[in-house]
Length: 111
Image (tube, rainbow, N blue to C red; front, side, top):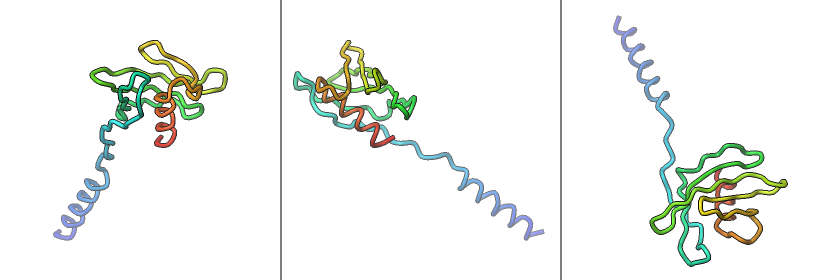
């Protein structure tokens, strides 16, 4: 009788420890660089919503000062393209937005 109870208790404990939910990534503000006006930009990593890996399609928020911008990344003409809530858009590696290129590079490296 004791052996059955002990075995059941061991089984229950092993299920509790192996069935624990996975750890969530901590929210992190990753420094991206500066916008052309000199304000620092930070990628809010917990807002990255990856929709597709091939090609990379995702959304995220970037924090600067007391404002956050929503970015969308997708493919246009076979090349990575972005647009944000301030109305800026362009090819990621077109040289117009080093911040957009930093966001894209971060997501490719970490997702």
